[in-house]
Length: 75
Image: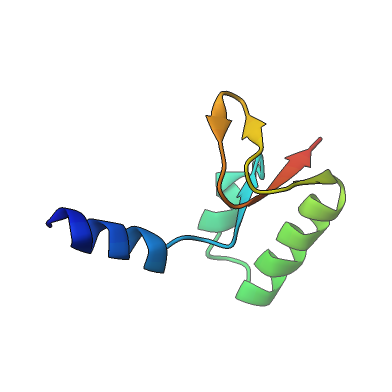
């Protein structure tokens, strides 16, 4: 991929926001005994128990500067 295509790819595939520290147990994602709706409900419950902090683009967090909005889920 040449430089111009790589730059276009980067811009076109950039996320508008980055969630970090989500920390969802893999068992929840792998459990074939529950429905997608139940998995989503458990995911929602897990995330609702966390404090959500929003940082503006350009924020440095853990040694990296983010061009996107950053959502940090804190326990």
